[in-house]
Image 1 (cartoon, helix red, strand yellow):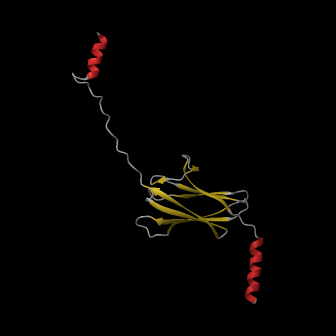
Image 2 (cartoon, rainbow, N blue to C red):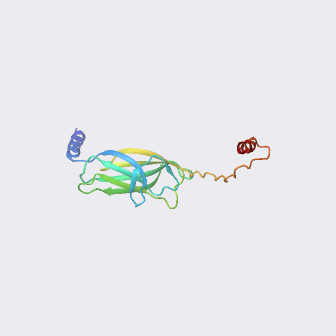
Image 3 (cartoon, helix red, strand yellow):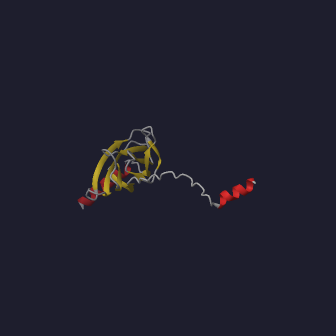
Length: 161
């Protein structure tokens, strides 16, 4: 009976504390000025950094944590935390920009971000990084020179006469 009274008391305290929730999570590439650009859904190994933008439903101060996890990446054990980053928002901040930046380029594979707000897990989202596809450059072909018996050349001679 004592344990249940403590649990009820603890729940009452927790429920009265205001907490922020996540409205949206999206990924973005760098906009060229060192900031998160527009939402992106596909990435290649040279997209460094990749941003994870977390929009909150409240502008009250809270702690937001991001775990970047390797889901299926060659040479990395599945579900290995690659990066953990924590940020405490200030008054009137309702957006947090996390960045993932490997040493060099990304390793192609599947990754996941796990987002925590106020210590509670609130959302996870996966993304894939693809290898850069090199398109072979085809040499420019010279236009074919018409041969003597070419009908188009004969037609031009007839037209001139």
